[in-house]
Each structure stands twice: as structure tokens, then as C-alpha cells.
Length: 156
Image 1 (cartoon, rainbow, N blue to C red):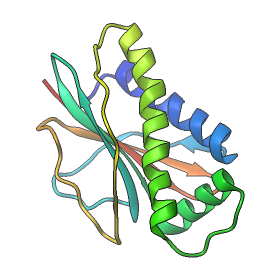
Image 2: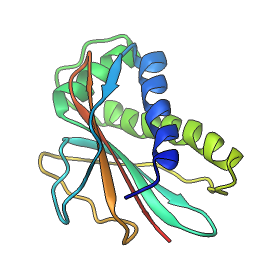
Image 3: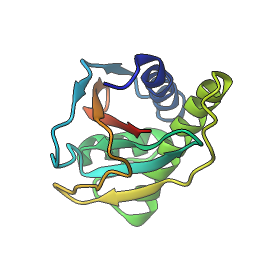
Image 4: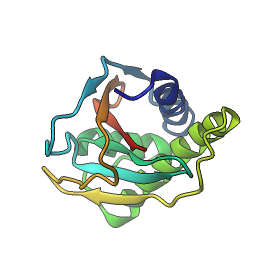
């Protein structure tokens, strides 16, 4: 299992970014280990690689379509009913903000995480190949916009 001291900055950053950027209040649920090859739980996922001198991995924030449309609506001040390339880019922006905030905290603790660029993957039942061979933990969230999931995978 991944150290909770590594997970907590991502958890705090997720809550903070969604509250400030999209006016979405979220609550984390019970963290669990992802089963091998399980599909993503959402329809839109922001993915960012974690690279340091001692380990690598990834962070994914995955939203069901309706949750994502509400989050983007809160962020951009408009109502959205369908996914478009313009709002899909928002998943990368949210992922980047969460990663950036968590990275500051973790690097203050000596993790030495390098800069990375987010990517967005979308589609019902999509899956992602892990960037590392380590275990993946999933943090489910409930929120005022609906449920969503953060996945963290690390290996040394």
C-alpha cells in the first residue's frame, strides 16, 4: 500500500482545487486497492505522470460524464450537457492544478518530484496502462457535483 503521507497531499489538493475552481464541495471515501486491469470508474480522466530520481508513477482523476459536466459548469460559469474538446481540456487543467499543489508539499518533504504534463483520456469504460508496476490505490469521492475517483500508482 502507498504511504498515507504521500496520498494526503493529493487528497487535500483535490478538495482545495475543486472547491476554489469549481465551487464543488467533495468528501473522500474509504481508500482501496485497485484490482489489476480494472477499467476506469469514470468517463473522463486527467492523467499525469509522477517522476523523481527514486520512483515513478501516475495520478489520475476520473469523472463520470455527468459529474465532469457539472464540475466544468462550476469552473466556467456555464451549463454543459455534452462533452466537447473545449471542456475536455478542463480535465487536464484540474489534474495539473491538483498535481502542482501536491508536488509543492511533497517536494518540501524531500520527494524531488519533477514537472510533468497532464493528458486527458475520455470514453465510457476506457482503461489506462499504468506508468509503473506498483500498486494503485483509489480514493473515491462524493461531491455536490457527483462521484469521482483519484488513482495513485507508484513504484520504485
